[in-house]
Image 1 (cartoon, rainbow, N blue to C red):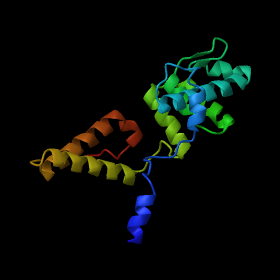
Image 2 (cartoon, rainbow, N blue to C red; image 1 turned 135 degrees about the vertical axis):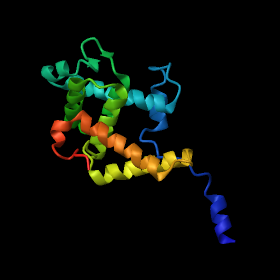
Image 3 (cartoon, rainbow, N blue to C red; image 1 turned 135 degrees about the horizontal axis):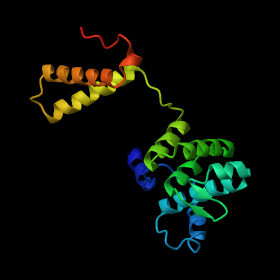
Length: 181
């Protein structure tokens, strides 16, 4: 069969996304960072160093604004995971703008990385009622799968509790939307 011959000659396909970095390039840095053992570790380090280089070339005011993540004079990286995430932003000006915002907010690392990811993908922080409703329905379905004895009445009661909590949290902003009825 032709298809069998073709499939036998193709070799084993590699999983995942093709590497952006040449393995030869990674090997050339092994003597600089001997403590790093994995390809992923080297890639993270490349992105950190890229961010450090961009911040070092920035004006003094920007370097001062980014002191929370990196001190260019002392050559100390304070927030490695954030620095690696920032290094994935290809445009230097955009990288600096996001870095300054992150340093101003000082979020936890996982929150900062999520912010950077949202910025890169163009997905803003604002959602809408339809999307939220879909996510709530999905959570209810997940709960129902874990606890099959849950009734529709239990779900509706839980949603009432959520509504009450939202109304109590910000009753002035919701003016009239929290009327019981």
